[in-house]
Image (tube, rainbow, N blue to C red):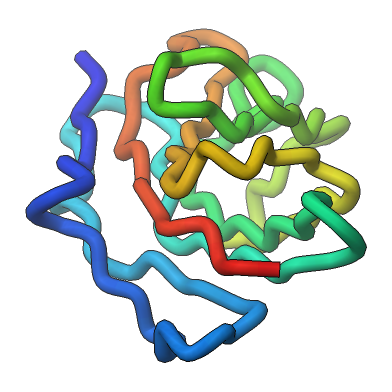
Length: 136
C-alpha cells in the first residue's frame, strides 16, 4: 500500500524562498514493514530553463538479482510521470543509496512533485516523498 507524504502537511523546504535554485524534501513517514523500496530524500536543483536535476536517496530490501529497487520516478500532482531513473543492478551492500537524474522538464505551472521508488518484485509500494520545485 502506498504511503503518500501529504504536500500541505509534510513538506519542508530547506532552501529559502528567495530565488534559491535548490530544494530538499526531508520529512517522510516511518519505514514501511513491507519489503518495499522507500524514498528517503530528494534534492532538486534547477538547471537551464525548466530543466531540473534530481538526486534521490532510496532504501530497499535488495537481496540480489531476484529482488531489488529497479527504478524511481518523478510524478506531477496529477500522477503523470515527468522522469524515470532506471536502476540497472541490485544495491545489496549499499543502503541507502543515492542516484541522480538530469534533464527532467517540469512545466512552470507545477510547483510540487513527488518521487516514488519501484521494487522489481513488489512494485511501487514504499514511501513516496513530495517536494516543492525550486524557482529556476
